Image (tube, rainbow, N blue to C red; front, side):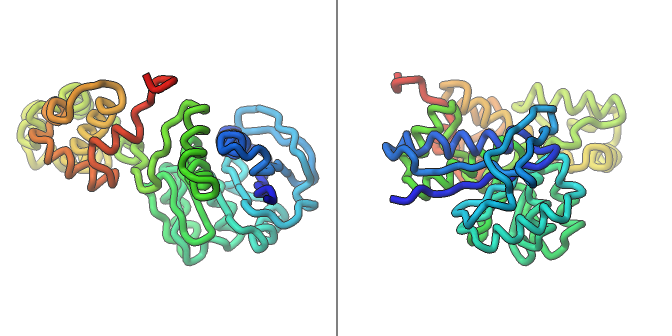
Length: 323
């Protein structure tokens, strides 16, 4: 069987993990599936010369991007250079994408795809911190800020950095089957695999530090006591403000309402307990402020599209050998 060709575009200021994360998945997947050489991965840069990553790592590509032929999967990583990209690079990405079976971006690599006109009329995502900018600069793109990756036909865009690994695992599962994806995930010591519609958790806490000390203390209390009474009335009492004044001030300084903030903190606490402990669902629900397992189940299904037990099954790391 012919090897599936993957071309990874290197550019100045590239985020190195956007490159190496998916590359390691594809490079190891064939062996994991008992099909060495299932993927042929090529890194390519404009002119074929070395590039320096955002962190200063020097990357030596395999080929000149201008000489790359038709590819099965074109992967465009993000990095500093995506904000004001070189026109020739964008044009070459557009040309290669027209002959590629799949076009994939990691993190702010979505900006390069958008500059090339490839995302117009499609759903896409990027790192949570850049979703608003992507939507503002490219109003013809339907930016979906929450998922860690989005599939829309032959296009696939992923969120920040490590989400590229999740997307690559999804593509391997599609190409070679779940067992191959599971084996390479275990080899890389990552979970198989976060579903694409799982939320980018940082979106809920991106603006989490309030300017005023009383509100910062309330935030600390919420994080340390998710099981407590976290009603607006109780939180307002702790901040020595009226409930109405507290709700307005909190939303203005934190960026979300107190209720949404509490929901995010409780969900974060519960998922970490599911990943890191053997505690039962009922105990976790109670200790994270849900009251009942059913209330926690509804929160997980609504936000993560998976009930708590399924979430634990997917994302709890298994000991080597299964013991």
